[in-house]
Amino acid sequence: MEQPLVVPELAADGGFALRSWRLSDLPLVREAADDDYIPLVTTVPSPYSEPAGIAFVERQWGRATTRTGYTFVVVSPGGRPVGQVGLWLKNLEQGRASLGYWVVKSARGQGAAAAAVGAVVGWALRDLRIPRLELWVEPWNTASVRTAERAGFHREGLLRGCQRVGDEHRDMFVYSLLNDAL
Image (tube, rainbow, N blue to C red; front, side, top):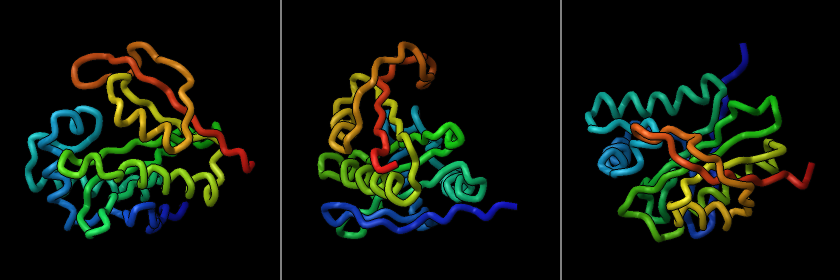
């Protein structure tokens, strides 16, 4: 049996940090559950309840146990959990992994997503030696587009109607970043 993945602690620009999920992060899950968009594109429970929040945190732990991905809590310089970054390994056998990220509304515009994505990208390319990283972003989500581009991702194209979001299929920009060190 393969060992579970170990989610490392990572330092990020601007004093942000990344670490594994804890049950003490339930207030973060609660705030994310109240967002109009985060629950549509993630497994964050909405409406929030404590049992649903606990189940969400346990699912994040399960990704490392099943070796399907790494999930990080983004922590502000002041020590407050403000978001999540995930590195998903579903297509690792084909030489690629994907990233997803969110930041709660009260912490947006402070550089958390850019710092966190940059830290995970650097680690994934340098330490894990993943050949290709991918992101999918809805075209209207300019903040996420800027985050992807700041981290060095390049837009490859538009995938029309490819992702189910809520009750509809939506267009997505696909972004990639190749590991030039390999």
